[in-house]
Amino acid sequence: MLEVRGIGKAYGEFPVFSGLSFAVGAGEAVAVVGSNGSGKSTLLKCLVGAEVLDAGSVLVDGVARDETSAAFRASVAALLDDADYFPDLSVVEHLRLAAWLHGAADEVADVVDELGLTAVADQLPPTLSSGQRHRLGLAACFVRPRRLLVLDEPEQRLDAQGRMWLRERLKAEKAAGVAVVFASHDEELVLAVADRTVTP
Image 1 (cartoon, rainbow, N blue to C red):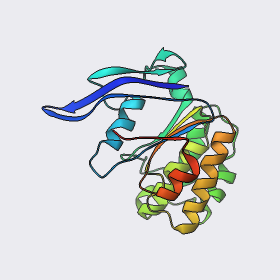
Image 2: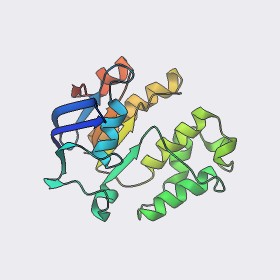
Image 3: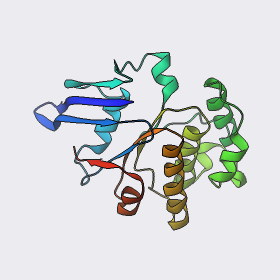
Image 4: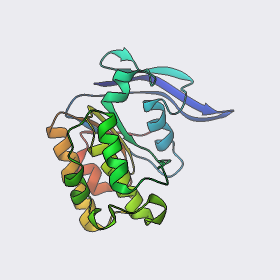
């Protein structure tokens, strides 16, 4: 599904990572691990084309990743650290729009319930807590079709019950044939979900 070949990224004279290679097949998960500032978020952005690589290549289904491609955008659901929202759309309107844009069956109500957002479904994003906004970002990934799921620290701002749910949800994604790449500081999540780990 995803193949990363010798990629490198630097900001000016400061290298973030170099010569990094790994692959993720359908139904597999790779966890990106490392200390704060080690380049985990930058790596995920490079995978989805939100950052430009200095070296190497990223292939999806054997084809060079093209973030402008409709096929690529239809296959990849991502929640990175800079998620943004339309301030005038409610939680449920955001999710209905995401589902509609990707031609998905309307499972919004189920996902809203699963993520514990029912009580705030009609609220606008600026009125949500940071934890609720994070759950909205996760929900936006799960209301649309996906073959590759890219998540930056999906456990952040989740309580113990939420982290338990996340472990089971990501295992279910793998069972459904989705390839998963996620950055995490949660050792339990990594041990429960990841088939392999990568350090930038």
